[in-house]
Image (cartoon, rainbow, N blue to C red; front, side, top):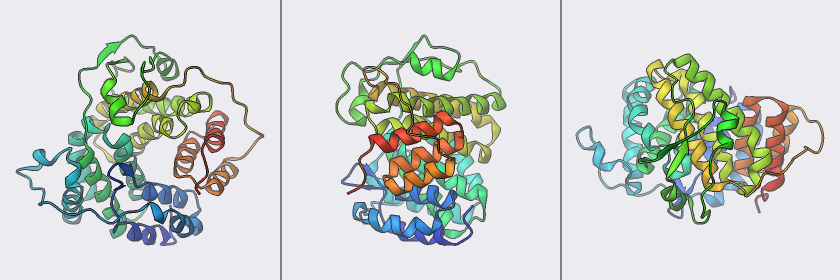
Length: 336
């Protein structure tokens, strides 16, 4: 938990910026600075943000307010990002943030695949901060930005065939069939997806859903070490998207935990299918490192996806997860 006030300062800097740039590329800064602060690197937040700032764009224009009567017509319309952020800003100002989250999570969950899964990841970072400490104005506003971005980029995945899977998460990810044509951007690849293996489909107990979701995060993180070369950036989300859901579960009513597990599996398996390499490669880390040393290497590297996968790897906390974080730093180009 950050008690320095630096995270709030950074979030205030960022809330004048839009959730994307160039009409499609996600603003990762809120997620990265939250990860830095969460791991005791608040002193590096402003310096990192200064370097990232060239990737930021101004807050997008507003169209018209989102209302309780007509919100469905604005769902999934990226032109309405500012309207959605304004809507959630009003919501978290007027009601407890957990109540807002509980109402909107089941509405947004079916569309967590839009924006390359970044919106739910941003929400997961915001919720972690709110659960860990005081619900300050900037932290509530950050939740509003995350939920608003999610609503604007809401994209369901429907009509997928249910294919044979496996019981364990790691084995189930191994059964995912890569797309035949693995080119183009995330939306194009997502549109080519026709089926995914079944996994954890029979789970009905919330506690079991929590356990299986943690298993999925661990398996997807471990898998990056041997499969991340398929696409070093996008395959990060096979782990960070389900981890965002896992981080949010404690703030959600328990009846929402099981559907959250199923949506997280679809996201992780879809990313795996869309960006899988032709074959795995063995990976041995370049030495033994403590979690703190691995995070320090991620900070020194500077890439936002390296920081975010390392953040998830430290949640998992074992040697294979740390190896995945080191592999991500090796595969990823440092920021210019």
